[in-house]
Length: 369
Image 1 (cartoon, rainbow, N blue to C red):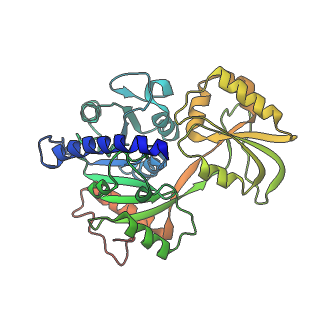
Image 2 (cartoon, rainbow, N blue to C red):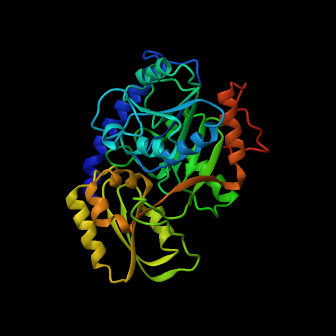
C-alpha cells in the first residue's frame, strides 16, 4: 500500500513525459521515416513477457518461402554497439538472446540488430539489394520508423486494462495507445477460451478503431536437448509421471505458462527463477547443479526455455556440469478458431502490396469492437 503511494506520482510524471513524446509524433513535429519496402512492426505496450519472439517467428515462418526477409531488433542487453548481423559464429553477447534464437531457428534468413531502427533498415537495404520485407521486433514505441503494418501484442494473463504505467505497473505507455496498431493480438490465451470470453476481453480493451483482434495460444513441442551431443530428445508422455523430478530453470519475464504446462505431465516440478535475459554465470550453474542433485528422484531432468538455451550453449560450464540433463521446450503460436488463415492472408497481402489489407470481412474475420 505504502509502496504504491510512493510510485503513483512517479507513474504520473512518466505518463506525462510519454504523452508529450507521442504528441510530438502525432502532430508531425517529429516526422517518422517511411520505407518503400514493406515494414512490419511487432511490439507491445507492456514490459516483457507478451510473446513477441514466438509471434515474430510465426511471421518469419509464414513469409520466408515467398519473400526475402530480414528481422531487425535492438538486441536488448547485448554488449556490442551499432549495427550487427547475426551469423553462425555470432554470440548472444553480440546480438542479444532473442535475435540469436531467431537466427538459430531460421539460419537462412537475415537477422540484424541496431538500436537505431532507421539506420538499421537503411543498412539492410544497402547491404541486401534483394531484400523485400523487414520485420521489426519490439518496435511499437520506436516511432521514428513508420511501419506499413503495426501489430501489438496484449498478454491475456496480464491484461492491460488491469495494469498501470511504469514504475507502478508494467505499461510502457497508456493502454489507449494500442489504437496506433493496425492489428491487436491477444497472446497466451487458454486454448479453451470461448467466443463470449473473447468478446468480453475485446470490449475491455476499449479500442477506438475497428482493428481486427486475434487470439493466440502456445503449443509446446517435444523436449529437445540443449547440447545435442550430450543427450537424446525426449517425448512428453500422455500420462502424468509422478516419479520423475523436474527442475525448471527460466530467465524470462513470465514462466507461469510453461510451469502450468509441465505440471500436467509431472507431479514434481521445482522452479528456479532468474531475471529476464539473465546471463548465466559459473556460480549460477553450480547452484543449478546443487538444486538438481537435491531432487529426491532417481529419474530427473532439467528443463528450460528456448531463449535460455541460447545462453546456456555459450557457457562451457553448463555443458560440462549439467549438459546431459539439460533440455528445452520449443513453442509455436496457434490461433483460436482457425483465425490464423485470416491473419496469414492479411500479412501476405500487405507484403504483396495488396490494397486495403485491413478491410477484413467481419463475417469471416476475428472479433471486432
